Length: 372
Image 1: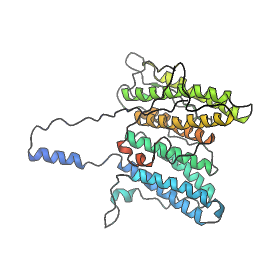
Image 2 (image 1 turned 180 degrees about the vertical axis):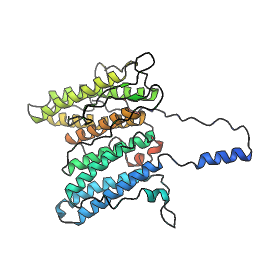
Image 3 (image 1 turned 60 degrees about the vertical axis):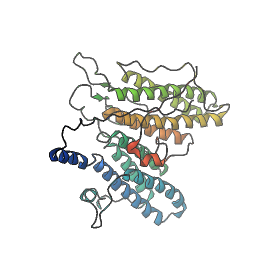
């Protein structure tokens, strides 16, 4: 299984036209545009407030009985500190007279404390992971990518703390007015995939005037094509994994992973109706030799870890229900990587803490390399 390399997908913003005059009126208009608040600001503040509640919960549990788990809890708390630093990057600092009105409006509510025990902390991690998904649609591409990574990390924490329950994303909303708004079909129950590694549900863009699905935006096509290329490689890689494992639970897990990635591949091909889906390569170069069960498990962990970056980029490159689907895939590949023994990342899919903290300037994209 090759290690996907990053491919840049530029998010182009519309620039203002050339200045027609240098009068005071235009200067004031320019100043007003410059002074407009960042639309991501309330989303970041809300996420920081929720993260502060989690940190307070960790502090309460660590200070309480059960010191034998304190070291493990401190490791998870360090991840949450990293989340907070990334989410708070670029936020205005409090003035000497006190916090800003916006920060005060999103301050943690005393009505929703985190229970000071491990089960309560696990439930809070899972609840917070779901809450981060509610802001995906309104977030900028870079912030959406960060929120999805934070949510995936929360799912990992909840599972590590003994709560394997599903992270239920919000119900899909109606597509925005206008042609071509992509939307995936919701499952009858609205529940996430039952598979431990999470198959991706599929849907289609809204119908066009001729009854055919409207074409996806160019950026979304590029993101889905990159994900499709990586899923082709994952299917190949899991075939190698299964062939090197003896009969037993691990082989069954590999068989389940193979089926999940096949399902994702097929869903992506359907989603790209109207575009030519990326084809599988004739062969793929493995990142290392796989000759035994140990190597097979390492390859499976490598596959899932690399896919977290691909799906994080797909979160940034899509909108609406497609973005929720990409966030689900990011979370489930992060869980799959941990299941195969990979060291959990504080921000799955993001390359490192420095890039996460500067997510606003990130450039999404990834691809899989192959050899024929």
